[in-house]
Image (cartoon, rainbow, N blue to C red; front, side):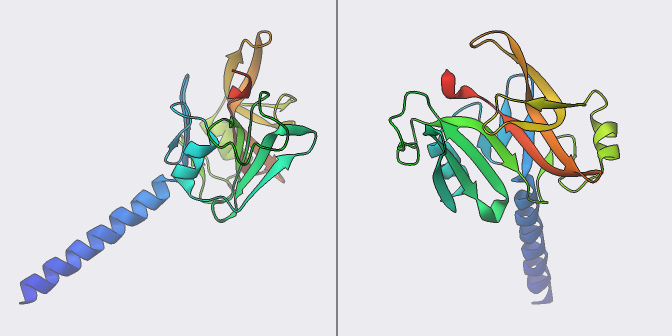
Length: 190
């Protein structure tokens, strides 16, 4: 009987550890040369708002971006995640309803559980950022909605409407600490 109880306790402990490990893994942002994943959501496979909702559940809020009626600001407050989704072909103010038609422009992770695939966490020092990303440079990016300034960690080249560089992964910082991680896709014009 003791062996059965011990086995059950061990199985429960392993199960809890696996669930805890899975929960931690769901807050990893991975941006490669041609791929990006935000936790369980493979943005490169399907950047739509519908896919984000399948990955994260119902959002806390969805509001039209002022001045851009085909775009929506969508928040998952409990995750510390905010995404801007849109399409230039969406009729005004309908981005929240047309979940399959709007795609990710950018996502901003500010919850402290978020980290990059290289191990940079929200809350880490800028010194750690430089150790993990020695080529990072502090720059602004005006094409994001809204424009943003931060440390460009992974840089890509875009070609629409002309050739330009953009931060596929960017870290914001204040007071020597990382305050957020931003994934920029900009697929809404494609």
